[in-house]
Image (tube, rainbow, N blue to C red; front, side, top):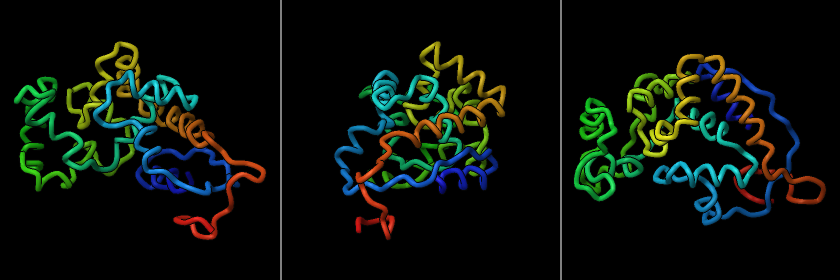
Length: 201
């Protein structure tokens, strides 16, 4: 969490309080992570359910999705939207046509392009701002799971608010990150304090 808040601040966003002293787990599971973390291909309902199972609500879904204002995604995570949306043989009709053209150039329909990268926010890819939400309003969300926020009137209303009020987004993002950081905290004799972050002692 310290790294996350520093990355946001260095990218132009606001900081939030980070509680220190949490203990590290004794194991990690790739299978569990893949099952519990939202997929870019999942419908909003599934993503909301996964968030709710960890004490996060619909607002947290919208707010934390705003982290996609910086960073990149591999082409395989959105390529079906460009060439064969839902098995139709055609692109996603909701995707902005100019963005579609750019993405097809960056991610041609060949297996060799699967690991190529595209920015999650084409307008300001290195700046932590509210442009991600403005992109969604223009049908220019990169991931299907991002653009899905405009398909539900509840989440679309929040997207519209964040697109208009950048400070509101920054403030709410900090609040949601605090909630996220409080999930599954190990205390007492549970877990350990790792000497090396990437491996158990």
